[in-house]
Length: 328
Image (cartoon, rainbow, N blue to C red; front, side, top):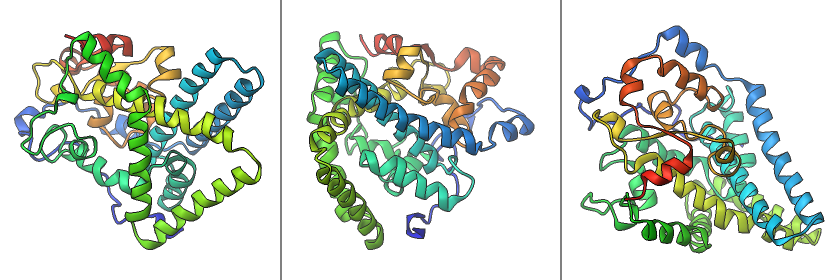
């Protein structure tokens, strides 16, 4: 299992070298406060992982027992967001902030979080660390991963915001109907077969072969399709891309750094169906990527005490409001 570890063992710098230092006058918290916020809570991490999986199994049991089309749609949304939560927790593992031991951090991050949703902790680090280091520049890892910009550095039409209401509705529909999900699954299959060391790929194949074999041995193929692959290919993919748009599009600020990302303060609906596990505290994460997800609201409260952050950071209340900012 040691092969799950990557050669990347340090946190990426917070901001890219291509952004002028004069534009990086971001809030600074005291070392004591940051040290306290940065502490890894193993119990909180394990409880988060366990609660997401328990919620998934309970949702499947309820929907399967009390089958109704409306209930199934809500179940797709709920499970898709729980899959999104697994991705958020995998993101913590990618930053080495899930568990204090790096070996167990990567083993748990792959087996229980990344691989079930066809992601790779190793692969994720390759472009995500570039996103942190070069956010908003031509070297930003998100640009290649999500195709947000052309080779000449221009924003592609799909990722140009704000849009007219009809254009935004079409953008959302395309990413919700399953087309983006099929691309996601095919790209994941290609990654499994071609990326990483041969040992890593072999572990991947054994993992998926074991799960598929068990599912069909128990005659649970339809359940896998209805309650895992369909949510994964629709609501999970949709909310991830919607979150990406909300994090880095249509942002107004007089400060260069705060033009690069938005924090959305989530409602209860957002937490259950769109942006789980504090992932929408995005400015805070870019400022201090070593702070674990369960302390981002506290970090936000500390930053709000600082005048520059309060006045210049782009803060939006609820994802419904963020959607309105993505519309002309």
